[in-house]
Image (cartoon, rainbow over all chains, first blue to last red; front, top):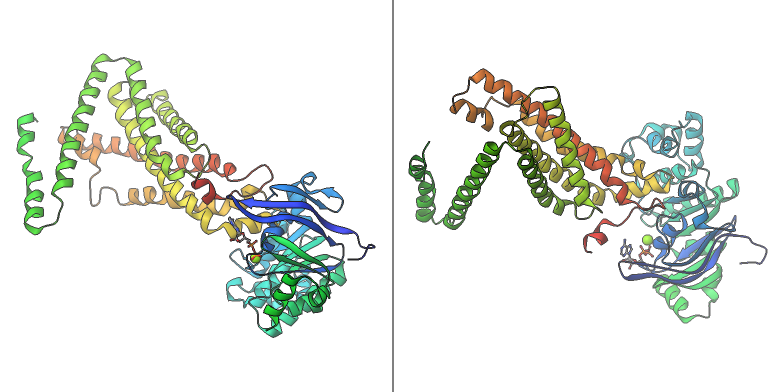
Amino acid sequence: MSVNDQAAVRFNKVSYANDGHQILKNITGWFPKGRITTLVGPSGAGKTSLFKLCNSLTSPTSGDIYIGDKKIESYDPVELRRMVGMALQNATMIGGTVMKNLALPLELQGKELPVETAEELVKVVGLDESFLERDTRDLSGGQRQKVSIARTLVNRPEILLLDEITSALDRVSQQDIEDLIVRINQKYGTTMIWITHNLQQAFNVGDYTWVMMDGELIEAGESSILEHSKKERVQRFVKGQVE
Amino acid sequence: MSFLTLSITLIFVIIPLILSKTLKLGLEKDTVIATIRSIVQLLAVGFILQFVFDSENMIYILLMLILMIGAATQNARKKGAAIKGITWKLVGTFIFIEILTQGILLGLNITPATAQYIIPISGMVIGNSMVLAILFLNRFTAEIENHQDEAELILSLGGTPKQAIHKQLITSIQASTIPTIESQKTIGLVQLPGMMSGQIIAGADPIQAVLFQLLIIFLLLTTAVVTSVMLGFLSYPTLFNERMQLLDLRNRDSK
Ligand SMILES: Nc1ncnc2c1ncn2[C@@H]1O[C@H](COP(=O)(O)OP(=O)(O)O)[C@@H](O)[C@H]1O
Ligand SMILES: [Mg+2]
C-alpha cells in the first residue's frame, strides 16, 4: 500500500470477542481509498466479523476504527451504514420482486426508487430490465448476488464491503462479478473490500490484499505478496489453496 | 351440590384409573395427582372467594388481583427470558390490560363494582393475557432467531431497529392473536363456553348467560390484541443497543 494512498478504513489494535470467544485479535491495518482490496483467509478466520465492525453492525471490544479520518463512533449508525455498504455472504433477499428489493434502501428512508434508476442499476450489474419484475426466489445464485450488489449501490456508498459473493458461483458467473467489481470501482470510485476464497481472484482483481488467520491479520500489501510473502503461514495457506 | 354428591362424582376419576390399570396406560399416578391438586386448589380458591365476597373490602380484591398478576408473570416470564426486563414488561402489560378492561366495565356501569364480578372477570382477562403473552413471546423469539439475516440486512442498509424488526413483530402479533379470533368464530357451535354453561346450570336465563358470554368474548378480543401489541412494542427496543446493533439472543439466554 503506497504512501500516496489515503485510508478509507483504518484499524488500530482492534480486538473483538463474542460470548467469551476471541474472534479478532489486535488488528492494525488499513484499506486504501478508491482501491480494490481483497481479504483472504481460511473460513473461521474472522473476515465476516471484521466486516460487521466496519459498518457498525457490531462494535469492537477494544481498539479504534476510523472511517476516513473520523472515529467510527462519531458517525450516526444510519448515516455510517449508508456510507459503508455491505453485500452479505448469502445475498439475503426480502420477499417479493427484484424491484421491491432494489427499492428497499430508499423505502427505509420513506422515499421511492424511480423506475429509471432501478433500470440503470440492473444494467450496471449486468442484468436486463425484465429482471425488475422477477420474483427473487426464481433467481440463480449469481443473479441474486448481482441484485444484492445493486441494492447496496442504491445508497451510493463510498465504501463497499463484499462478503464471499462469488463462492457459490460457477466460473462464468464468477468472471461476471469480477468484471462488475472493477466496473463499479472505476465508474463510481468506490473503495471496494472483497472477501474471497479464491486466491486467483485476489491476485487478478485486487490492488491490495489482506491475509487473515485465526482472528489475526498476518500479511497485508500489494496483491503480489500472495506469491512473495516471506511468512511461512502465508506460504502454507497459498500452497494449500493452489493444490 | 353438596360435598356428599361431589364424593360420588369421584366415579368419574375411578373410570380412567381402572382403564389405565387394565390397559397398562401408566396414567394412574398423574390422574391421582391431578385429582388431588384440583380438589385442593379449587376448594382453597372457593374459600378465599367466599371470604373476600363476605368481607366486601376493596383491599382483599386488590390483593387477589396482585396475586393473579404475580402468578401470570411467573408463568410467562420463562418464555421471554432472552428479553431484558421481561418481568416488568409483563407486569406492566397485565396491569394495563386490567385497568383498561375494568375501567371500561366499571366506568360505564356495565358490571357492578363488587368482588363477585371484578374477580372472575379479572381472572379471565389476566389468564387470557398470560396465554397470549406466552404465545407471543414464543413466536417472537423464534422469529428473531430465524430471521436474523433479514434484520441485519435492513440494518446494514441504514434501517432503524424498528424497521429491522418490523416484519417479525407483525408476524408474531398476528400469529399469537389469530387463535383467539378464530376460536370465537365457531363459539357455541360445538361446545358451549364454560362460563355460559356454568351460569345456565346454576339457573340463569340462557339469554342473560349469552349476553354475558358475549361481553367476555369482546373483552378477550381486546385482551388478546392489546397484550401482544403492548408486549411487542415494549420488547423490541431491548433487542438493540444504542448503536442500533442487534444483540445476540442466544448469548443472553445463557446468562
Ligand atoms: N455470533 C457469533 N457468536 C459467537 N461466535 C461467532 C459468531 N459469529 C462468528 N463466530 C465465530 O467467530 C469466528 C470467525 O467467524 P467469521 O467472522 O464468520 O469468519 P469468516 O468469515 O472468516 O469465515 C468463527 O470461529 C465463528 O465460529
Ligand atoms: Mg464469512
